[in-house]
Amino acid sequence: MAALAVQYGLQTHFQKKYLSKDVNKLGLILACEVIKLIIAMAALFVESMNGKPVNLFSRETARSVVLCSAPALIYVVQNFCVQTAYVELNPITFNCLNQTKLITTATALYLIKGVRQNKKQMLALSLVSVGAMLLSVRGSENGANAENMSTTTGVAMSLTGTVLSGIAATVTQIFMQDMRLSPFLVTLAMCIVSIVTVGSSIVSQVSLL
Image 1 (tube, rainbow, N blue to C red):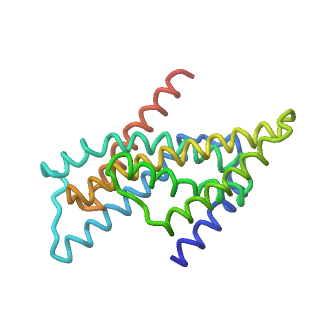
Image 2: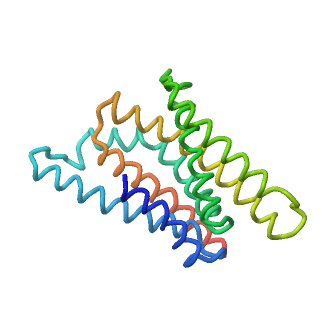
């Protein structure tokens, strides 16, 4: 948890510092998916070494790729929204708004799987929701100038990304828990679909130039 907290804190800082608004977001998403693919393959290899062999060319893998197509495509759009929000918002605002994905995930779990939250979880989600609304209002005030318009765009993209993240996370959880698919295999399958989708989009853009 400590490592995750550090990652959340530093990621937006580095994104803001080293990514310009003109960066090719599809290219950035593609690079991230390739790295995730390599990590997932390495994890599957370690699993195989520990007595849980996985055949990447089996029917199970092909089935996983097909099943994971929907959440993978949702994550592609979500990643585009997130990358846009990164460069439009300051790190603190982005991190706070990004936590609303806890709310969207909880809502999606209830609507899709009927999973209810306890009172403590509801209180925590309410606090996150209030904080996000305050930041949204603050970002949208005096929206006449270019900077505030940019902030409004960032808020909209961030909130859209959290909604998509909640839906995709719930569907992915169904695959991993209810259908008992390997988390690494699910990640691998989603990376493959994402790479093909984003790669095709980049090729289409280049061909139109």
